Amino acid sequence: MGMLSRIKRKELEGFKEFVTNLETTTEARRKEIIQVAVLEDPIYMSWVIKNITTAEEVVKLSSDQIEKIINNLPSGLLVMAKAFFNTPELTYLKEQVISRYMVADFNDYLASITTLKRAEQEGAQFLIMKVMRSLQAKEDIYGPIWQLPPVELMREDKMQSVTGFKEIKFDNGAIAAKGHMIKNHRHGEWHHFFENGKLMAKGTYDQGQKVGTWSFWYLNGKTKAEGSFKNDSKHGPWNEYDHEGNMVVAEYEEGKRL
Image 1 (cartoon, rainbow, N blue to C red):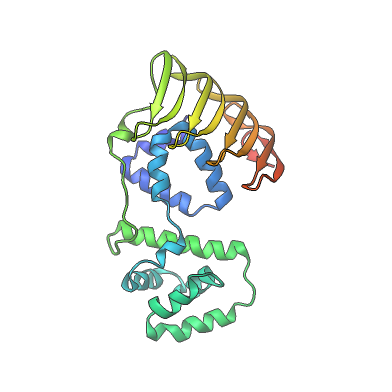
Image 2 (cartoon, one colour):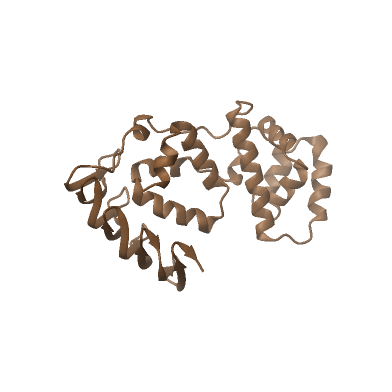
């Protein structure tokens, strides 16, 4: 249980940095980080998740804020063209957001793009997000309004108890996780839940470390993943399912997907 502890020490600054890092991480990796972090502290992560935004949300900012982002990007219009090439937001961006004196250049950049790899487009979107959050931190733009957690949430460990049965609850009173603690560590079988009460994950801890077989579910109750942990990291074969129930077998070694 070390990842969030390090972040919480920086309080609100660490919270914002963590959100920004997740926003600029590939979707697959982001989901993996969130899945593990939610087990560590579901209350903290509920605040993190509600603050995560995407490059598509940048389009909803006022035109003067978007212009500031463009002006602070290296090759700003080209980056915007790559980020929104062939996306639903492109028409709105050209017609309602890009200033008239920029439209011709923007269209030229779009016309110059013949093929665009997903990784390249994603990289452009991540760069926009980093610049947007940087300008927001300097109060040069408002950006998406932060929904910040109470500082007390980062100054106390809601996951710890002494010894015995423990229930962790969301702000709305719903149970987030339950199981037994031994000397301030989770031990034995624990159940983790979504805020609507449905089971999210089930597995075993050994002195605070995830071990043995674990199962995860989607919000709709369908199986998401099944596999084993070793020393708190995924290890060995994992059965992973998409929302339609299609399964792939992924191999992990000490938390790294092979």
